[in-house]
Length: 342
Ligand SMILES: [Zn+2]
Image (cartoon, helix red, strand yellow):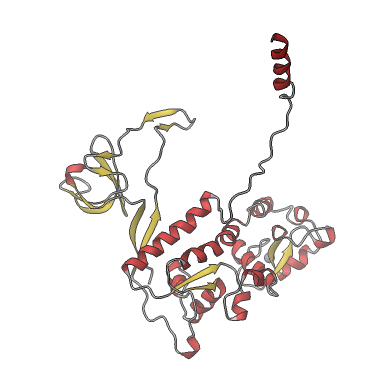
């Protein structure tokens, strides 16, 4: 028995050392998104679902992709295959470059002049056509740079050189997020039972420019979709204020508050509710005296002492629970009104 146990022990332990780590070869189920992206789809869907519940929504129009002139040239929404084989694939890159480099020459900062696409590492020196190797340059800088390496061309401007090198390292994060979620978002919105129309970002821009509106989030939202301004379609009313909804979550699982080294500094209370209020509740506070005397509306973060912290558009202050009146229970979102620029 002892010998058998010895053999068994060797068999179990002999090959345990220096074993390479197992690769992550488990497939995700179809339609899986990482949580950070899943949240975008889910949050948008839940807001749309509420709007459908409380308002007579008959059609849904969304801007599906930020940089897409291909669909605009076709005059309709495109299918995934058409996106891959687009003849205007390059124009998306151009729009994206304009946004990334702030519509100005990367080398001298000139804005409002014609801009060329410039290869940071020149083509003649083996530079690629990848997005990370492209920037915008005014005609003069473009010609002056020629096939000079970037480090040599900007040798006398170390600050600008560092800024450019930093900028080209920034990944195409928002474009990638958009590309990953756009089809899922459309599919999700279709479950609401209303016709869903997806439009390109270029059409939004086209509509907005034709209406003579400046670039704000609200004007962009109003300009999404088919707006036939040549035949009299127009945006006749713009809102004075908009509702800003922010996903705030429903609390954290952490039991302690860490200091900057990660060690526990405070122990959080087990209870979420204190004196009838929870963090995130929308309340109206009537402060009788003091610097903050008056009536205020906002979200609170609760404290165990009953001196809750109220966040208002003009500041944050402590207010006793006896001066608070509940307007709405926390539901994982914060709601605020924002005045629109005229
Ligand atoms: Zn320039």
